Image (cartoon, rainbow, N blue to C red; front, side):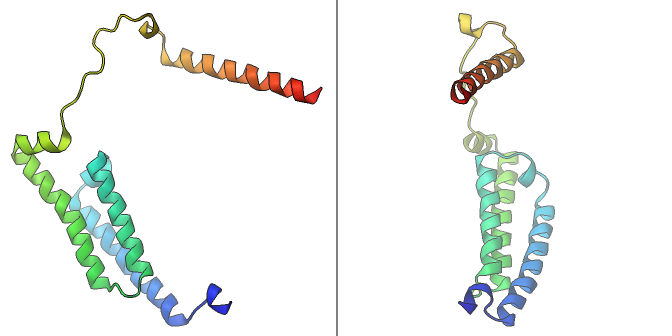
Length: 143
């Protein structure tokens, strides 16, 4: 039961030391990668950011992964999107393949459901109906 809360000072020191260094390395690599890796989150960027976070956690918590191996993983995970963005900026076909083309779902809709109702009035109508339902149930149960 004693190992549940604390194992030894060496493990704790490694986590603190490697954790700080890995976090600083991640911040530097994200700064080097540019603002796009954090700004516009399409599915490609989202997967990359989740992989970066998972790598940071693995570096800090897994004693068999050295700091140098983790830094190499950061370079790969930041370098691949950088190279893909560079290639897509130079080749429109690569950009089209990665980003896809937008699909028009509706054009000049004439359905009565799509008439000019502001989104705010629809939200207010929903909350009024919700409040009436909740108050009705409240009155029923408090009698």
